[in-house]
Every structure is written in C-alpha cells, then in structure tokens.
Amino acid sequence: MKIKHWREIKVGILAVVCLVLLYFGFNFLKGFNIFSIVDHYSGVYTQLNGLTEQAPVYIRGYKVGQVDHIRYDFSKDSSFVVSISINRDIDLPKGTTMDLIADGLLGGSAISLTLPEGSVGEFYAENTQLPTQIVPGLIDNIQAGLLGDLDSTIVVAKSLIANVNNQLADDHLKHSLENVDKLSADLTVSSRELKHLMQNKVPSIVTKLDTAIGNIEVVSYDLKQADLKATVARVDTAVDHVNMLLAEARSTDGTLGMLLNDKSLYVNVNSTVQSADSLLVDLKNNPRRYVHFSLFGGKDKSDKAKKTKNK
Image (cartoon, rainbow, N blue to C red):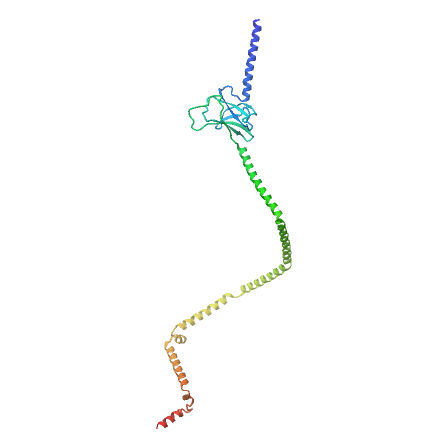
C-alpha cells in the first residue's frame, strides 16, 4: 500500500510540474518575462492603429515592457483599454504619457512612454491609468501630405475645367482652331515656295558662286605669279626721288630752293605787282595820255597845244 501511494504522489507532483512548466512556457512564448517582477499600468484610446497584445513598450526607443491585454467597449467613445507591464525598477513620474506610435513600415504599432523633462518628486502608483495620445507616424504624415496635395490638385483641375468650359462657351477654342488651320495652310504654302526655290533658284546661285570662286582663284594665281618684289623696289625708288626733290626744295643752294626760300624774289615780285597796279590805275584815270602817244616817241598833241597857249 505504501508503494502504491508513493507512485500516486510522484504522478501528482509530475503533473503539477508539467502544469507549471506549461504555464510559464506559454507565457514565455507570449513574450512575458517570467523571471522579472513587473508593474502594471493602463491607458484608454479611441483607436489602436493595429496595436496588438505582446506589442513592445518603449522609453526613448528602449524596450522596457510589453502590452499585456487589450479590452474594448464599443459603447464608449474611448473604446479600448490597453494594459501594459514594465520592469518594476522603472518609476514613472507624474506627467508621463502613453503614446501610441507607429512601429516599423509594415503598419504595426507600439506604446512609447514619454517622460516629462526635469520631473522630480511624485510618481505614478502601480495600476494607474496614464494619460494617452496618438502620435501620427511616417505613413500617416505622407498620407496627410498626399491628401493635401490631392485636394489642391483637385481645386486646380476644377478651375482648369471651368476655364475650358468657358472657352468652349465663348467659341474661343473654335477661333483658336481656325487660326491654327490658317497657320498650317500658310506653312504649307511657304514650304511649297521654299521647295520651289531650292529646286530652281539655288542651283543657279550655286553655279554663280562656283564661277566667282573660280575667278577669285584665277586672280589669286595672277597675284601669286606677279613680280611683287620688283614693283615694291620701283615704288621705293620713286619714293627716294620724291624725298630728294623735297630735300632740294628745302635747301637754299639749288635753283628750286632759292626760288622757294629767297625773300628778295618775293619782294621784287611784290614791287613789280604794285607798279603794274599803279600803271593800271593811271591808265584807267588818263586813257588819252596813252592813246595819242606818238609812235616815234612823240608827245601828246594836247600837251603841245597847252605849251603854245601858255607862251
């Protein structure tokens, strides 16, 4: 009988150990730290944005706990009550908030405990309901920006459509299309004329240009064959003769120099001119004196008559 009871006791102990191991193993698989002592807190949210149980709890990006339970009551505005557990060695000062944040790019969420700056003194007790807020993530910001851009784009599109409708109502588009057709017709005519010019005029112009280029080549060849050195030598000789002539004109020794530089010649010429001028004046005043002058050197008869009368 004793051996039989001992076996039953061992089976019972083994069953209890298995249950304990199963409980702790299940909690360990769920993410609970079975070897640490934790404190529990809670918060209330209007929405969870994909938050699930066993989601991490962070303080400044460091994991300090996890979400234990999520209870909901859709009859209330704040439908969700989230219970979390964090390491007991962490004290939460008054003013700490439970922020619902985005965790990764796949749409997951987590809890971030935001501690107030410079807080000292009072701390929250365990099982306290903390103030909460929802922090929009990167995807939410992008969606908000896209929605804003989409709204502005829709406004611009509506304005554009209204302008198009106004243009259609005022027949402006019709006139514009008519102008485009006219411009296209003008371009067609211009293209035809240009084609005619290229076919008929341009070849003759090119032929004339070829002839002109040939003439230029001939002239260039003639210039190349010309004795430019001899021509330049003759020009230098002519310049030397001119320089000699100018030097002789500036000199007082030569005939040309004396003619140009002798002052007495100028005086004599000037005196002769004055005498001729006096003679012309006297001739103008007393023409009879010179008209009745004797061919043999005789004097004027009037002068003789005057002398006889005077006697």
